[in-house]
Length: 366
Image (tube, rainbow, N blue to C red):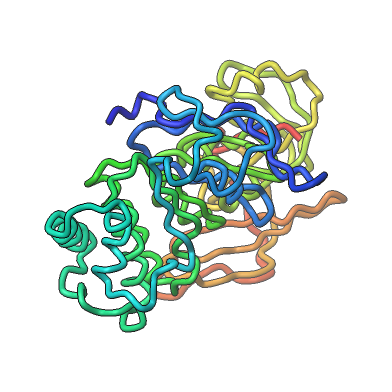
């Protein structure tokens, strides 16, 4: 396993159903041993990517390469991949051990070897004592782990996970996220995980591929996508972002100004050559996270402006304020701040001075 090596590569992959295109010239490389998440809203094409890789759907155009070899027309049963579906797809009449060992049985492996490997797989997913139970006797999280053990037992090069946690309740979902990531780190098998949940993607992935309308909009680490979205769609879709429209001013080193209804703001353009090259006056957005915004004081030298608190929402460890700014081009911004144990907070209707530092702002072309 070498995470610097590409395991699987999609080259100019397209897919249409009749005359309706759903994927457009997708180029994507999956590194050996990484946890790659494909993220997007419904209809973005993320599940279609998984199904094409798994051989569940034929390509319309392009090719898929495994270790450099074209497998675009390789039958599904010949591909060294396994899939974990949202509905688990367990056999209800088989025990846990029967479900997990099914793939080895159809390969006519010796019974003694199947028994040994089933026991190892069940121990890996912490279900050793459930071997003789049936799926109906298990919780949702346990059935999910059975499906995972069944995928792992054949030692695939790649495991495809199609929104496998979507049917679980919130707390169990969080536990399974941690469990899946820990398993992937332990066995060092490549995972391709499809989800529409941004928090799930941030918490699990080594890299995230954000899709919209059959196109890849951005591919990068969770940190890069969170703090350096490369387009308006990613900035709006990936977590909470305050987006203030304006016109670009001149660049100065690793920063650039933007003229907005809030005044002149300065944001970072570090490692963003397309923003350095954009012409003055180009339409853009100043993007900054709710947690980057804070109450301004006399020591602040960053981007300052005033606003009125329209709403306050207690969210446990944090409190979220909705801020409106005046003028003809009114803005609605979000401020996230730590909650106070004594319950003291700002008041709705209060006018406040706000600020964010230039290095915590980011520019996005409109």
